[in-house]
Every structure is written in structure tokens, then in C-alpha cells.
Length: 131
Length: 131
DNA sequence: GAGTAATAGTTATCCAAAGTAACTAATTAT
DNA sequence: ATAATTAGTTACTTTGGATAACTATTACTC
Image (cartoon, rainbow over the protein chains, first blue to last red):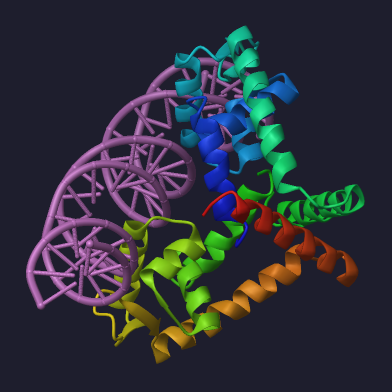
């Protein structure tokens, strides 16, 4: 909570240099690491309603960063990164990595790992209450 | 990032039971622990611009949770919790405490402390880049 | 002490990013 | 074959952020 706003602010300024918004970035991130997703999968992953995903996806598609993958089930819209999308992701990734290094400054490797473990434990607990 | 949304969603549902929004809660929280603040102080603490604070404060004042404290400097608007505001804070606090206990389930006291330390270290690093 | 700087807050306006409700089209289950 | 479910969209609302331009007050400077 107390951590959130300053983090968000910094992330936003990093992203805005590349003309990206946070919601867009989170989708590029997921797609880069997981190949392709349907909107419903994204909405679960992001913890956000479907119309929210529809809108962000549409914008990313317009920008030429995403393209649909044909599927059997004609209801679903499965999306993947275009070459441009992948390139943009990689560029932004560099900036984000630097930024993350900066905010972890002075925290030992061991503590970082512990921190990550705690976070993912919290995440698990949060997920339990959802389904 | 990945932690944020599910946390936010849970927090929002807890708060909405008490007809509060996140931005409002963060101000009640700060005021309960720090007595009284000016809008500028709040805007620094929250990492948010002044007009944003003006709006939220105005709403909380309307709701009868906040009241102005007279000051020498006639420019500033220093605010504190009303009795109602304090009562509401305490009620909501109980719900938030339970929620926090729940998401920390299975994480040892020692790890929790380590986690908090890491967070506050990150926060310090984030603050450095601001001023 | 007059005049300029800076500071605190407000108003107006914009926009991102979430939500809900109601819908269509496609698929599954009965 | 029909009903129920699922994926996604459309239309609309709201929160909560940002900027720009402003007023009122206080602090600084010569």
C-alpha cells in the first residue's frame, strides 16, 4: 500500500517514454512469457473484468503489437505478440530491469530471494479467496 | 506488479462494505496515525498531485469524517479526523487486520519481518529518485 | 516597506483503467 | 433439438490520477 504509489509513478514514467500504459505493459509482459492467451485467460491472470481486457487488447492490436491466432473455438480470440510487439517488449524490458536494479540497491541477494518468496506466498493466499 | 491487482481487488471489496474507496482509506489511515496534515503533506506522502488530494479531502469532509484545524498560515488547510472519522477508521481497521492476517497465513513471523524490511528499503530507494 | 518569489490550495478539464448490465455468437450438455 | 454455458463486445458509469491556469497568502529581497 505504502509502497505502491511511488512504485507506480516511477513505472509510469518509464513506460510513458515508450508510449505505453501500465495496463498495456502487463499484457505485453504476460504474452512475452506465455506465448498466446485468450481474453478470458488474461482477465483471470490480471484479476480484471473482460470488458477491461477487450479494450486494452484492441488498443494493442491497433498499435500493431498484437495479432490474433486462429483457433478451433470460434468464440475465443487468442492473441500473440507480433514481431514489433516482441521488439518493443525487449526494449522496454531493458528500462524496467534498470529501474528494478535501482530500487533493489543495497538489498542482499539473499534478502531479495526471501522477499520474492514471501510475495509469492501472499499471492497464493490471495488467490485462494478467489476461484 | 503481479501481486498488486488481486490485493487491490480484495482491499476494495473490504472497503466497499464500509462505503469507502481506496484513496479515501489511505487518507484516513495517514490521519489516524499522524494526527493532522496539510494537503501538501498528504500529496507528498501519497505521491499524488494536489488537485487529487483536494477532491478526496472534500469528499471525506462532506461525509463528516474530516474537519479543518485552524492554523496561523491562512493558506494552508490542515485537516484532522472527526470523532466519526476515528470510529469509522477503527471499524474498518478490524476488517483490514483480518484480511492481512489471512494473506500472511503460513508465513513465519521472521519472514514477515524480513519482508517488511525489504519493502521499506525499496521504498527508500524509490524516494531517492523523487524530490 | 514595496515589490517580487514562492507556496497552498482550488477550479476546470482531460484521460486511464476499472466496473456493471445487457447483449450476440458459438459451443456443450441434457 | 433445445437449453445452458462460455467468450467476447458494446454502452455506459465511476474512481482516481494528471495538467494548466488561477487566487490568496506568506516569505524574500533590495
